[in-house]
Structures are given as C-alpha cells and as structure tokens.
Image (cartoon, rainbow, N blue to C red; front, side, top):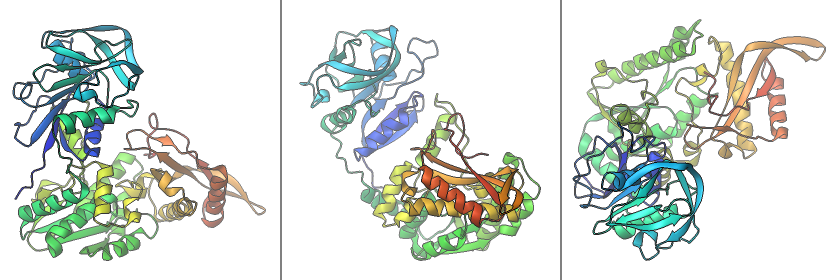
Length: 513
C-alpha cells in the first residue's frame, strides 16, 4: 500500500535558492521534490503543480537550459521564478534583454493586481527580493502583468486561459515580505493543495511503506548518536521491531563518556543496539598518520571492516539502513545531470562497498534537517538527542591537528567536555549550531606557580548556521570564555593556553581539517 501524497515538482536550473523554494513549500505542509530540468519524471495525477527555479544562466545564452514543458504548460498549474519567468516570456514570443542596471536586492511593488488570485492579500509597496542581470522587456499578447516595481515593469504576470504564473523576484527568500503569502495563494488557492503533509502523516505513511517493503527481513543500521541515524532507527523500529539490528561503534574518537551515555539513551528507546568497543583497532591504523585526508580514509576503511564483521554475526541480514537526508540526495542527483556545481560526492557510513551485498533502505531521504527534527518530536524522541550539535564522522581525529595518540585524545576529550558542559550550563548550547574544541599541533610557553611550562594549546570553535554551507562565528560572552579558559588550563593536564576561533565560513571551514 503506497500512501500517495499529492506533490509539487520543482525543476532545478542550478539556482542556489532551489532548496529554499522546496523548504518554503514544505513549510506549507505540502510535499515537493526537486529534479534537474533535463530529467523531468513522468507527470502523474498526484502532481498538483510545477515550479521552475532560478538559474545562474541567462535565457539569451547559447547553452541556456531549456526544459521540455509539453506535458506541463497549459495542462497543470505552473509557476516560473526568476529564470523560470524569463524562460516563459522569452520562449513563447516575448523579449528578454540585458538590464541597464543589475537588478539585485530589495525592491518595492509599485503596482499589485489584487483582483488576481496570485496577488491576494499582497500589500501595495510590499518589499520583494530581485536577483537577475536580465529583464523581461516585453511579453506576448496573452500575458497579463499582475505586479510591477518602479524599475521592473514585468515583476509578475499570468498567462490568460492557463494556470501559468511567473515572478521576476524570489518569493522564497525572507526579504520578500509577502513571499509566503504568494506561494500559499498559488499552491493552496490556485492549485488546491490540501496541506496534509505533516510530521504525523509522514510517520504513518513511512511506517506503512517500510512494513510493506521489508516484510520479515532483517535490517542492520549503523548508529552514530546523531539526529539522522536516531530518527531513522526509531522509524524502522516502529515498522519492523526486533528485526532491526543497530550497531554503535566506539572508534576511540567520540566525546568524553559518549559511548556509554549514547548506549544508555538508546536503551531507554527500546532499540536493539549492540555497542562495539573498537578503539584499539582504530588507534592502530591511525598510528603516525598526520595528513587529514589519510586520517579520514583510514577511519572510513576501518569503520567498514568493523561494521562488516558485526553485520556478518547477524544471520540472514538483507538490508542496510542509512540516515541519508534529502540535501545529500539532491547533491548526488545534480551531480549527474543538473546544472548546479557538484558540491561533494556523498558517502554515508563511509560509503559501504559492494562486497556487503545488502540492499539499501533510507527512510529519511526525502527530508531536510529541520524536518528530521520535527519528525523526531512527533516520535517523542528526547530533545537532548534532537538538539545535538552535528559531530563529524571521523570524530576527534580531525580536531587533533597532527597524529593521533591516546594521550592527545584524552586531553581533547577533557577540554571539549568542559567547553560543551559550560555551554549547556550557561544556556548557550541551543543558541549555537555547532561547537567543538581543536587540539593544536603547537606547544607554547606558560607559567604555573613558579615554574615555566611548555605545553599544548587548544582552540575553541562555536558557529551559527542553518545548514553548514555557510557559518558565522558566535560572539560568546567574554566572561564565559574567560571562565572556560581558566577551567581548561587548571583541570586538563598538558594544556596551558586557550584561544577562540573568530573566522567565518567561507573563507574558513567549520572544522580545522
């Protein structure tokens, strides 16, 4: 039984805002999917509308992306945003020209056709966000202008006799004050979407689909203690109960006491979890390795070995479950056909090799991170788990600059523990997206009592972000930093200096390696 939700299709022309369109649609409790413009799926009866995204291209360029809209335009509601609006004007008899002034940033609507359903409840003078170098100079006869700014006459239009609409501005960004209203007008009032895609409905339909898909098969899942793998685990457990086998590996690079506390936490959730202490196996392959890439590889390969050994101990396992989420999927789809630049090839659980011969199940692969948390709340997962900061797969190995030793791990665990605990005690933890401590590969002179010391330095890092793509350093209070620094130097043997990292991403990254 496949509980089909109605959906909206977003065709991606490579804009950095495409994911944002999807998030805004989802916020209206409407399910949507992103596809590259040149890989349009078959349009089925459950597809209520299609949205065309923006693009770094100009419609006038020779290699400009041209979608095949023969199954869509005039047949189901269609909305073109920015490049999408220019494409619908340019290819159907209008004219798009380079703009005399680059139309970028805030603008205000000087004309709004409030009689038109699309513009219902949009205020005159409403602020919108422009981002384009071309402008629509003229539109075909059967196109009707429904909004203008002082500089952009064709800010929005509708094609008569069709449910086709277009916006030159970006309704999905927060700077467009009535953007959410416009999207709701289109999706709810014009397309008739019922807004029934809620966390509870997602849990119900996913559990039903998993039961059908997995039947009585056994499934193995690598847990990390993070949000994605935990929510995936609880969903699967709801569907198949004891047939889910979870493995939590201690690679010796977790935070202080994390192995025990995470195992404890999972016990309370009723999950069938085996904790595997593999510290020595990881330390062995990391001995003398300083290069960050080599460290990552060594940990990834060893994880596969340990995981494979454990999976083999379970008889007749058929499936490997992964906590892959939607941004990972979009990245890899774009990589094979979309115009957006490939960000990274995605490996979940270290990219498991062919020899494991397991089928893959990914219950979260249609969700964004904030949605995973919402689903987690609907499953009554503890807030402490849902609010956990992201933690890198290679763990503390990429926060120790240089080679890994048991002593360095101890030092870093202790220092990090003081920092994270202090953030929680001072009510700052939830105001930060990610925080951690780096053990630097330099030693510095210090004074303790009457003696000079020559010991290690650590750097504290705390950033705010929404998705990790960009990040700003957090202005933590000086008094807080002073206390943390003092505690670390007094309590952690081997550290005599603490610095605070005030770089943003870009140009720096969140982690140091």
